[in-house]
Length: 278
Image 1 (cartoon, rainbow, N blue to C red):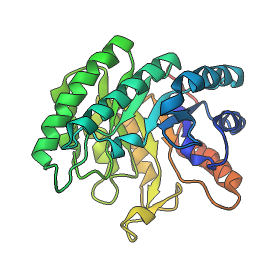
Image 2 (cartoon, rainbow, N blue to C red; image 1 turned 180 degrees about the vertical axis):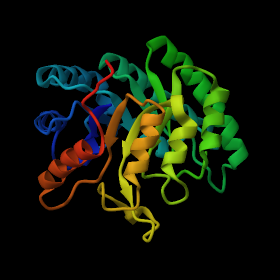
Image 3 (cartoon, helix red, strand yellow; image 1 turned 90 degrees about the vertical axis):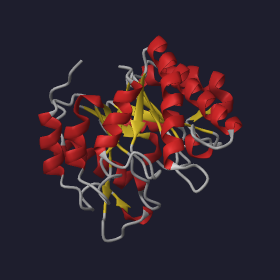
Image 4 (cartoon, rainbow, N blue to C red; image 1 turned 30 degrees about the vertical axis):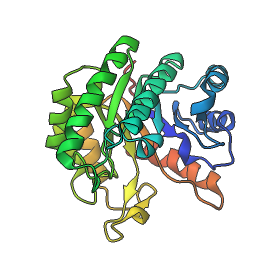
């Protein structure tokens, strides 16, 4: 397995060049960057041509990988929105992510496949998501970049069997699961998801969750919640997972450097990064 970290773990005021340098010092092998419209985003949607060469050069200088690209924009522009204009915007965003990933030698982009709402029914969202991901899979295959479908709190693909069936229905080897351990602990068992999704898993996010809180405030740093990390490790060994383990944890407001150090040390203690499948 490989040791990565999401750029959102770092303070908002820290620019991406600093993040890459800090991540290298903390012994991370890769940094997952995030496409957004925020002024301090590491990769800005409206300034891709400016940002990409700078990021690529910095990653090469620090000798650190950009294994994957995430985004918060598919919540604003869902691939399954009732408005076709918004759906098209979402499609365009994913296409930009794929092109950026190709440029940065990233293996994977993270995609939220759809959002169920009062105006977008579960059934409708399912078929729109299948249609959108099949379309995007053509670009992914051409560019040889994986699309990782993430399990998030979007009221959609709520079980591992359904997630597996969705990926199998898309039926493209460049589409798989971007599995988030902490996102399922409130209503399931992540080790069961891992075994069911198995070979479909492309990359993994890790964070912890306290079930007694039960809402978004329940997401906590590693070892502070209810995830059974021994069972997670056993499940990952059972499926012979060799990809990235990427913490995605909000930074502390005070002494964020201490949390980053703790994240690095904790993932070292939880996972075996001594054998890397290159």
